[in-house]
Length: 418
Image 1: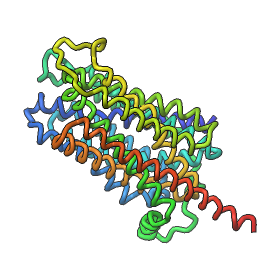
Image 2 (image 1 turned 45 degrees about the vertical axis):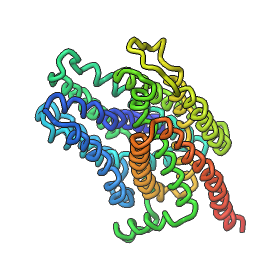
Image 3 (image 1 turned 180 degrees about the vertical axis):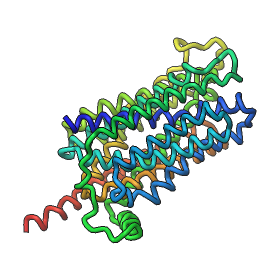
């Protein structure tokens, strides 16, 4: 019973942060309309969100086992609850910056704590993989919900209206509800405690040493490449729909929601699949299917003529085929994360997640920048064709990753037999 309550708390936390993290595009649009901020200035909100995630993960991940994961989650929820209240009470562009700064700091605490807690409640490797996929699936449900929740409060007839700020009363209440649930849920964190800690500096150095283990090195590079692909597609798909497929701007964004929907469905369904099947053939099949979608969809995007009366029924077929890549992409990130964490002692889950968050942030930023450069210098089709390169590298990385996982398992089993 307590395991179910813990998982409910983790899913709800991830749902809340999915809404907050993925509202940045909507908030950029609204601060431009409300506060007269230019596009260049408004774009810094993305940095206020992403940089704190990487920096805080790097600095505190190794120390969280001593601080306590439950305490870290409660602190994170309290921070964002207050930051959400500030939005309608102190409406200003500076408040929006502060909000995303707080969201970034809080999410760094949450992701390390949540991933480590999954390792504490999962009874075996397959259950761990199932929980991780379901958890990331709930995250994508939160991403989809963000479009609808914010859309409900936006006054389309009056772009200068600040009625959209009322959404933060709801989000603050949701944070408070989640805070209460976590507060009254019992967490047993003893297994995640380091066996012998010599202080925060020593714990930090131990996290850095993790990276130089072959297993960890192959894993973080594979995760880096995966996030590079996901962020490349997610960030530039609306522009691809608008410029290459000739869809209206609003429809370009709406069609992109198919991609997020596919990610959600893929991860939720993988939560059941990964409990029953071996992870490696599932991952390899997904990567091959990703490459097949790219090769199938992009030729359909050539020669699309502009149609001022285009609708969902008459939109180019590529607009619906290419987002299906999310269905096959979805299980990979939580799947390899689960295998990696299941291969380590539970007291190393926090520093390992810290490294994961850092390389994920770097991969996302790199993917978005490289794809944007190629998109602008050449065209969107060539930019998306280039995703075949990291897709191929992820496939190679999976083979090396499996080899290192097997070697690690043999190394653990050897001394026990002797």
